[in-house]
Image (cartoon, rainbow over the protein chains, first blue to last red):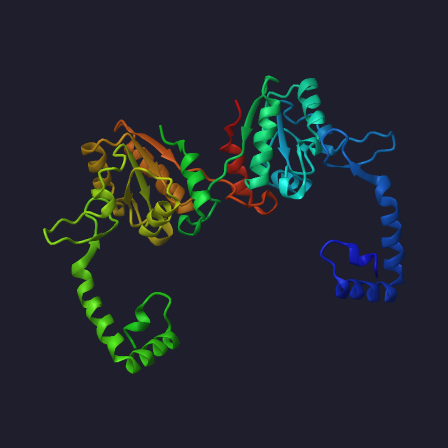
Length: 194
Length: 194
């Protein structure tokens, strides 16, 4: 019960419901327990990009995207967290590979530049064929600060550093957009036609 | 009651509540009634841009933005509706003037190109010092179709036609963004740093 309540979004009541269910379904309890025990030995962070990777028997710790040779090696998309990587993958718009920061600069939470895995990022850019680093951190205060910091750190490495567009989302209404988003949508305008 | 229920978003019950209130507050009923009678003679569409304009005694029917000489005459922002114009004004990001289409192309609703006020738009661009037309229709299916149609119609007029950015809104989370928005955010990426 106490352990179940440590799952994200699970409070005491939900933990109790889970516990009571697991008591009545002993088979589920055993199966779930066994796979949880195995989990850390089977899934871990990809040693290159930080994505989830299935650990293979030969000790290779690369995720399926990093191993996929059909991926464009010149494009590297830098994201804040694995969930964002998965969302971009679902969109099908990214042909290249990724790099998961795991955190964003956040003065309020005491997260400074030294906590970002910048050294690994620079090592990848130096050793691989990357020509463009797309900073896809969220367009929040922390996300923008992180993007600018990374752009500065990457300058001089000979890669083109770009930032994903911020603006009105698909199907969104200008009338109900916040002022910063409207400002960015205008500022980030691009030529059409011709 | 019947007339009150014709106001947008007002159903029978709300209309009844309004009516009962107006019966008990005769002063409000008289004042509201008198100003509604006057309304069409005081406020009308700006003859240049379609924004709301206070009709002045000398018969001038230009809105305050079109009359404002401090506005940048080279920038023209094309919007779908007055509410969008007001939203962009609140953002403070637009130094130029506007043009309100009043509607968007919509095959499903039977709104074709001939219903857009393209002739007025072209006349403004031809006769004024406009160098850039910013198409700020919403990034919806109808809004995009309208933007492309206008861009094509304006090509050859010697103005630069641009489209506002579509992407992740300020403070938005990539994880919860829809796939089209993520695709646009990546496609519309811009250089940062340096």
